[in-house]
Length: 213
Ligand SMILES: NC(=O)c1ccc[n+]([C@@H]2O[C@H](COP(=O)([O-])OP(=O)(O)OC[C@H]3O[C@@H](n4cnc5c(N)ncnc54)[C@H](OP(=O)(O)O)[C@@H]3O)[C@@H](O)[C@H]2O)c1
Image 1 (cartoon, rainbow, N blue to C red):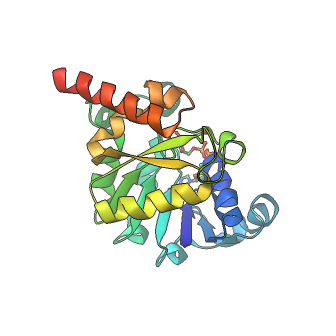
Image 2 (cartoon, rainbow, N blue to C red):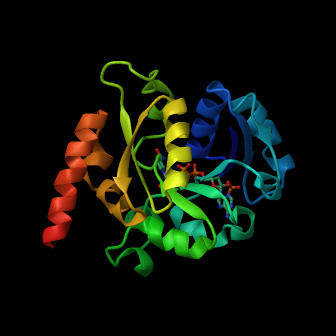
């Protein structure tokens, strides 16, 4: 796959490295010109190419890994029409209190509305950047770690699930984008390492609790 990464920080570079290892073509960008992250990319993500953000267009999917409090500075025009993975988490002590994320919706619903015409999928938010490479295992490995995947577009979710599998994780369908809140900061899924079976059981429990609220 042609993978675009927006954000060359901890998460962006870790996902990019793992994606290169999986054999994908990886382009990585920030809000700055490519020249400013060229050296960083060569050293930290060998095999990936630093590009201007415009050059992420045409990717099979684009991973957004920007601090949430900066989401309004994202150039959404680059993402239009694409499958977009939202890895971002809201944590008020770091991001500051942001009213739009205090209302009980999944943060990814708010992000998707801001981004516009994108097929947004939430995943990779509930794995530490330092774990992305070390917890990876081939498909079928016993106790392989699983990651939840939420989105409203079934085809986009299928593309993202194949990507997650290529990174070394079972992908578990968590339902629509609104169900992303079941694996956001503070939830049991967010806080631990789980197999697919465990993620499914935790999603069931969360969804029952949410239905009762
Ligand atoms: N840390 C974790 O283990 C972890 C795990 C899962 C998910 N997350 C979530 O992932 C997100 C990113 O976290 P991180 O730890 O990777 O952050 P980080 O290390 O601070 O890196 C953020 C990156 O985003 C870039 N950036 C900032 N504004 C941008 C914009 N408008 N357009 C394009 N790029 C922009 C920054 O570039 P400049 O330096 O040039 O500004 C930097 O390369 C957060 O929402 C976090 O909650 C974190």
